[in-house]
Length: 247
Image (cartoon, rainbow, N blue to C red):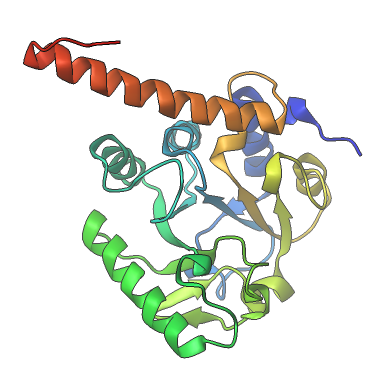
């Protein structure tokens, strides 16, 4: 299997956006039922790195396009309530992008048979995200939808939010994803050149880095960056308080 590590760089990301702009009109989820042909929805599930999300948001803003960033309250590598991470989310919105809810049903041990409790938990997290960023949240995506059978939840909307895994989107848009740091179905460049009329693109910001790396190296880069930042915060606090930093 060819993994195309060279695809997943900031330089190539810019090239892909430029190619998409030549062939498609960028729309948001609110426009999907009114859309005609030659449209593209671009979404980001932010699983690991808000810093990488901001970098992609800046590239997109420079190129004049709007995408949607799905934020997760249960990530293992970022915390939306942390000062710096919270400010990154605000900056993504200031750049003109939308935010959606990246919902992790496994946090609540939910499966597809627990629809009533699902609606309760989903609505709660929607309100949390709206309160946090003082913005309307009108779309959600499942995190790891294979777990618990949530790929089978195909309702158009839930709790006032459009479902990115809805039957409507599956039937009307061609899907392309970079999950796990490679092209699971088709290479994005090939999809953009395929002549498909409506595209639904999912990218995960952690995979898009300055230089060519394997997926595992990209994850290590994220984890090491988080570790180094935590160490720096600790060291700076002791310096500020004039205390010994005993090593």
